[in-house]
Image 1 (cartoon, rainbow, N blue to C red):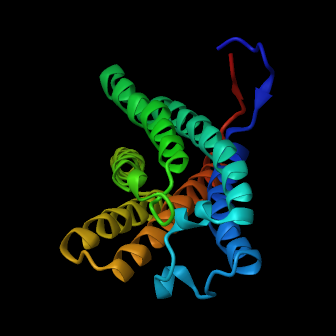
Image 2 (image 1 turned 180 degrees about the horizontal axis):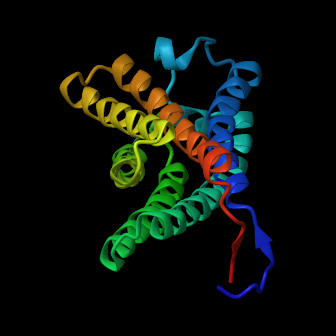
Length: 222
């Protein structure tokens, strides 16, 4: 790849993506509690408030919208860098690479952006179903990508970091399935928050693991 815009450290981008996604979700919630009068709780445990409900309040919605766009852009870049590593390390086929590229670099970030452009329904009920559809697409594609990458890496090496990535991916699957069999409001909210946490930790672990073990070189980006 030609060096037209300089060198980018992929590990930094991947780790930052995980941190920013957590900052976006929890920051929006805490702002809604502090300035918009939302009930205070611990959402991943109590299941009191959906992540996207922060977009329906006045002040927290500003922070919510301002952080979700850079988060989705970083998500696309991170998934691209992860794919480059997997392609070089595990020597995946061109077909597998293209499918994962379509899922992770194109569909997931776009679906997430559309999801957060559509209010959840607290104040705008007409958008609720579209919001839920695109939320399912965005979370689903991210989970598929993470699970597939984890399995590919595990077959290549039984490294502890790869095993941890696989465990986080399996947790993602469980958190996606539980609300299907237990469609209770509190359960769905708890699963959504913990799925986001697990997704974010997956990126952070990937970035740290690659940095500590393989010391991958900086990637030239065209």
